[in-house]
Length: 244
Image (cartoon, rainbow, N blue to C red; front, side, top):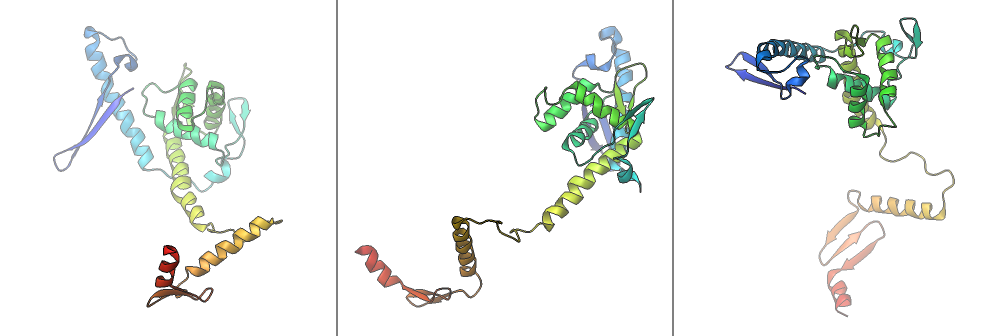
């Protein structure tokens, strides 16, 4: 839709530019006589992009945010459900909201559904505009997304952007690595009803692990001695056997 360029100018200057490859997305008439109007709209797009970037950089969570997410919400006179952040669908919807946040004209439920499908690799029947509208209703009930007046387009709220970014960062960058590091490499208990093949595999694994423990293999002149089974293999004898 739009392209942003961010680069330094000098030692203390940061310059941000926007490029509109398709001027139809500016929401105004296009033509040479409309060129001044198109130029006037570009600074507003840059300001919105920087506002979104500032909200994402300075994200935070309140004390009761996690407790209030699953609670029921209400949009106008309509009651809605809470947000279960453990479900992948709502996380994909939040990530799609972050991706569409810099759009100057907001986004529709169809655009959100398309963005979610690109993230989750789902089909249109699995996640369509109807599913996106339901998720947007939940986010509106939690004051994370707002509806633009007299339109069917939506835009994220500043505080909502901070909360959404903090939730995704907390789960993906903090909780998920900690839980992965706390998991045991091997299960503490075997199968409840092991088959004979399971017992044989377990014995093989234990024997292999004990063979590769420190001081289990000793090098000697002409062969290798294994403390695991007390065997001694001579290289010369093994060579004669191979030649035979």
